[in-house]
Image 1 (cartoon, helix red, strand yellow):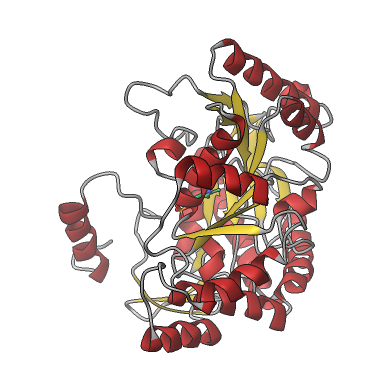
Image 2: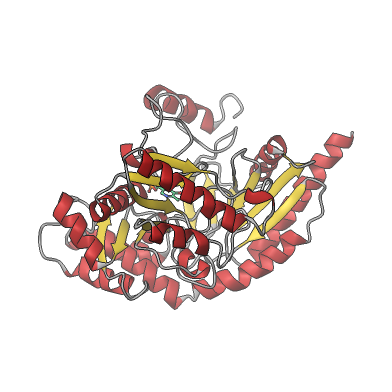
Length: 430
Ligand code: PMP
């Protein structure tokens, strides 16, 4: 920010108070003060189109969610050792949205906690400790889960009961081609299972995001995981499905990513969009898995499933239904993808979309164009459109707007993207 600009002081205060390596987006971080629907406003009153945020799933500050939180907060909020209808009403509604054998729920506060429980469920059921995830993912920040998250290797190195298999890749598909990728991925999982067994850890489970969101959504589709699921089942392991990103209808055709891919996980975890910004997350599983977990570990979470969290989460489910947001993700998603596919630029290697979840992969001569992708993100922010980037080399634009995203919003977002691409080209040619 320019010296003296309102953001400058906050950046310095954050650095002083919060220490180094606290991530913010953008070279000039946005100082947001208000949100509504798909829009955010900064302290200077400037409006931004939010194309990144899956946390305010039904729109920033949705009045129905705000009202539900306020009403319940004014009536009762407490820890979760009393009887209360909230968790039951919400939990029964939620499990109704999952496959018939996934009937039991643990409510927690973050996706990380949910995934931590999922790992322990796999260990409780199998009696083994070995877990597998991809080598380019993020599942959260508890000590155990962070071993699956590859941004920074843990002190002392990755523990030997964790194996990381190559993630599907848009630039260098496993097995050499997009068609070969599903079987090649499964073969790597199979090899990792053998290694875990040979090392004496045994195999507990495979954790993955069904659409490989943090990996950049690299060309997976229905059936992709079928060979992998077979390999895991044959070895007696559990499929731990992290729905933090694709869950709650974002795919536009299904409520969950695993339903879109067409497989039945043993454990499903969810978070971020669940409370529209209120910290609430959950693990849903079969009664046999739950019994094994409860017997092995016991579990109590002071805030997990408290009355306010359940009121927020219930309001989110109701808004998704009342406003037809899954259908909106389908319709506006297809419209937006059409606009994106019409973009012409030599560095666009691939454009992928799944409901209201999009990726634009930039590459040149088969090599990731990360610098260019970074410039696009910054220029979009300068023009008032917020989006992010993902991928092993951070060369993939990620758009994942709140679910009430409209055709008009798409016109603005993709129109601005076209302008930014043209502007960068004009500068490069000058
Ligand atoms: N799983 C996935 C796929 C995520 O993207 C994230 C957060 N980015 C998490 C889990 C962790 O969720 P939380 O930050 O709520 O702990």
